[in-house]
Length: 378
Image (spheres, rainbow, N blue to C red):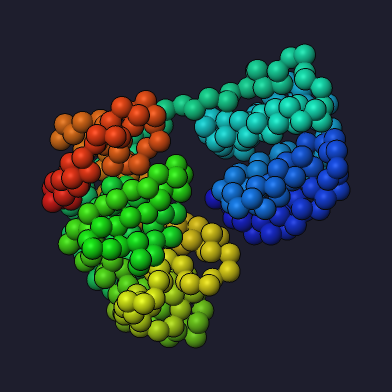
C-alpha cells in the first residue's frame, strides 16, 4: 500500500518526465523509455486515455527498475526481462500483475521492431518470462450476502451508504463498470430505458429502468449531500476516517470529500432536475471538472475502501469491491440456468464467438426479464 501511495504522489512528476523523455528523441527514438513516452503521447493525442494510461504505467514501472536511466532498444534481451520480472515479484506483485507490465513492454517492443526502430531479435526477449493470465479466485457473493449488504444498517455513515449504493446500482445494471457509471448522463435515461456505450468494448447497451435503480440513484444523491454537509462543517477540509467516526452522530462522515461528490448545493439541484439540462446522472464527478478521469478513479478507490469496511462488518472472507457486483450478477444468472448467450449480452462482452451467433436474433426483453428476476431475488 505504501508503494502505491508513493507512486500516486509522484504521478504528476513522472508524467512530466515521460513527456520530456518523449520529446528528446521524437524523430527516430533509439531507447525504450523514450519509445514508451512517444506511444503514451500519441495515445493521449488520439483521445485513447486508457491506452495512454497503460503506457504511462508501464513507463513508470520500467523506469523505476532501471533506476531512472534509459536503455537502448537494441539492448532489450532475455536476461534483462528476467531480472525485471524478478524485481516485480520481489516487490510483492502477483504473477498476473507482473504479466501485465511484461505484456505491455512486449507490445511496445514489437511496435518498435515493426517501425524498424531496431532490428528483429534473433531470440524473443520475452520467451522466458510469464506473459499469460492466470485464473484468479472467485470474486462473487451469493444472494444471501447481497441481501445482507442491501439491508445493512449504515445510519450515520453516508460515506459507507454511498459506497453500498454504488455497488448495488452496479449489480442492478447487470454489473456496469464504475467508469461507465461515472460517465452516465441524464439524457442516457429516456422512456424507462438506460442506454450507454460500454467503454471497454464500444458496445451499446440498453437496460430497462427498474424501481430499485431509481430508489438507489435518489439515495446516492442524499448520501452525497450528507457528505458535502459534513465537509462544509469542517471548513471544506476532507475528513479522516477517525473524524468520520466522531461525526457519525451528526449526519455522518465525509471520507469522499465534497469536491468529488459535487461540492455545494442541494442533492436535488446537483441531481439536475431541469429537463433541459444534461448533467451527470450520478454524483461521482462534477460537470466541467478538470481531470475528470483522475477524479473518478480517486472516488473509485475510496468507494472500494468503503466496501471493504462493509465486508468486514458482515464478516466476509473476501474483499468486497465494485468488481464483485459484476461477478455476482453473472454468477447468479448462471445459477438460475440463464443461457450463456443472454448472460454475455447482459454483461456487454465483446466475445464474437457468442455474440456473432446470437446478437442478430437476441430478444432484449429476455435480458430485461433475467435482470428483473435477479434483482428481485435479493
